Length: 330
Image (cartoon, rainbow, N blue to C red; front, side, top):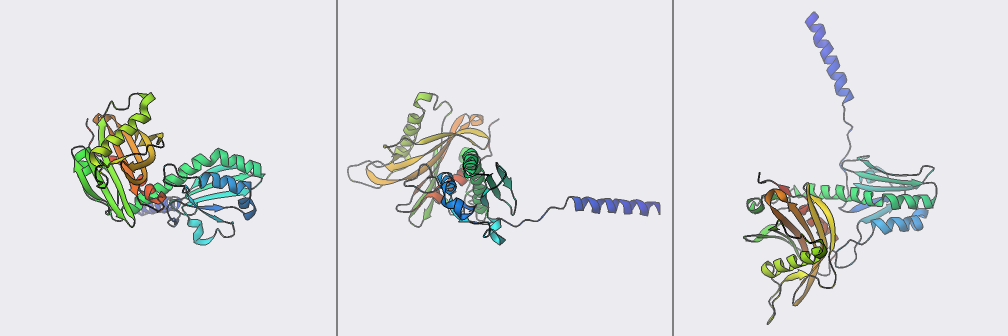
């Protein structure tokens, strides 16, 4: 009896513990990549508050051939925001309320999900809160969208090992990407798309590259142009040497970054073909890989004339940010 009583007590404690740890079920989030549901009443949307939302969340993406918005905005009233619509992955609530706040919540209605809330008692307060919180909201939305894109890659992932064998890294990318060219210190991977091609290139530079801050951008351009001239030829044109280079008219955008836990630089701009009318956007990460005594460069670029390129470049960004270092020197 004593053993039976002890066993019963253990079972009761176990059942009670399971109830306390019960995880609430939430459906999988939905929505196209880079789509944001903006929930606010029509009067706010049509006025200065709506203008402020569009200023940030529909701002032009840097480094594209022509203007395309950062996010595709789907505006709706709170009455419409119901049912499966609540499972949208990125949601921005803007509301006139007695509260004065701006914050971000995670997995409110679905997983994964980011829900940003902006409130104020006046339009001026709401606008002030948008100004103060837009940057971190955009970062949160981009993060969840990058993660979603990377998750979709896993449905059919590229299993080629050239990057691991040559550079000790892996990139998570769909199987439609194929290695097209490789040399001693250069790998070119591409994917055909309806009106062009998406490309990824990887190469390394000496560890002491880019030491002079005053010539940093100029040195990046010179590096890209030398790699293009050596490895990325353009179409055959009589009496001309054609190759990919950085657009001459504008300097690329350069930002500090962190990739796979390592200090890096993000570079966005336009490439063009020397001696031939072709151009498109590129995105590079120059990673300070101290463990391997090198600067590792990973870059994505797209050629898709007369086609919107935001989502193509976002896919390339998601691939580049999936990098893992699997063969570090000790």
